[in-house]
Image 1 (cartoon, one colour):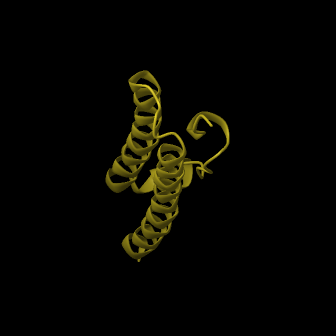
Image 2 (tube, helix red, strand yellow):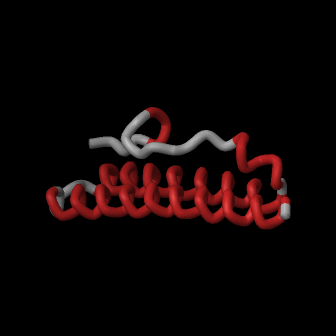
Length: 88
């Protein structure tokens, strides 16, 4: 039973985190379309920001997969606030 509860929580967390990644990708795509003439340095900044968001989520999810107790310890990530915010 505990395994089933863990699986449901993990799936819910995964779904939420995938939405965060999709939003980040959408925002970066829009930025790229609006800034086609951006210099390489600006492109690198935006690439790094996207990588940080994705890597942070992958790290959190990897920890959840191996530690059932970790599911409740991971705060929800909301794109656009704090550390995960993309530069506009």
